[in-house]
View 1 (cartoon, rainbow, N blue to C red):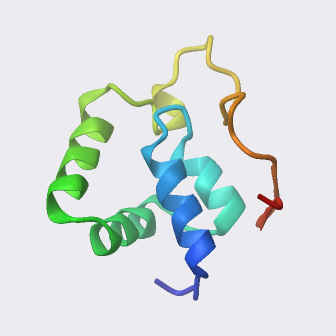
View 2 (tube, rainbow, N blue to C red):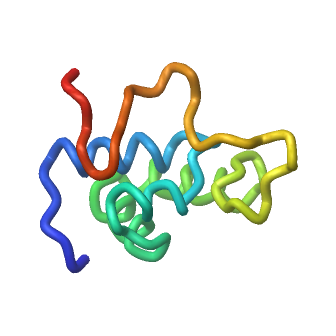
Length: 93
């Protein structure tokens, strides 16, 4: 990866990657990481079995991780439970 990420940023990216409704485009917008680098981060940071389970979810169609796969009824990046995020700044927890 070309960026040095803090532990908090890595944790947030992993959390967003696990969320079915958060597209890779939202992670790219907020952290500057394209899908390929998110996958590399997940592979590096997760246990092998967890990584394989995540990749299976992304490719099975359970998640809508790509904007072009989303039905028209899904119009937002985040769930109502997600913390407020602006740009690359994570709000106080």
